[in-house]
Length: 216
Image (cartoon, rainbow, N blue to C red):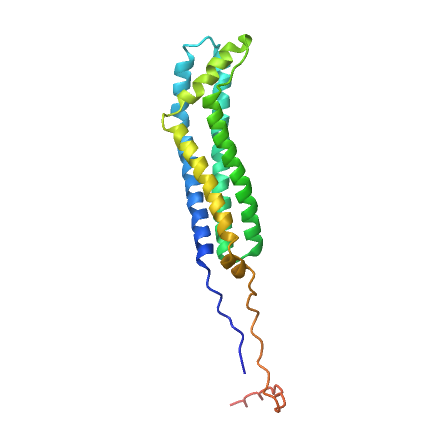
């Protein structure tokens, strides 16, 4: 008689590597969340100090300051959500769920697009600063101070993270498309063990209930 194989198949190295890359990206996104909120107060103070030398009114300075705060908080929320999402995808890949692999491909495509757009925005801001009309001169001056209000390392770090994010998504999507990953995600899961059948030529043994023990 034979018994079904119950031991799970060993995870291939490409799946483990893709999971590791996702976890590293999740940790980086979580760290970015805390750093973004940590530098917000110093950035606002530096912006207000520099804005006092412009022709903008206090109301205009407050409006741009509010925009700066909202932008930083929104970025932190998106980064925190990305960290949770990437960690969940990594756990799903370790469990061998086929639907999670498809979802990971979708997230990788969207993440790669977002990374390219972030790099394009950073490069565009440096290459072609925003130009407004003469009637909006004060607003143009305030918006021009935003980049200088952040620490000097902030923009290079953001650019590096955007590039690293895009490369990470590309690596994960490629690893999950390799033959070893296809074979592992396409394998049949072990079924529940069944009662072994009797050898040929022997009738099945019926179940016989045991009589109760006689009272003492």
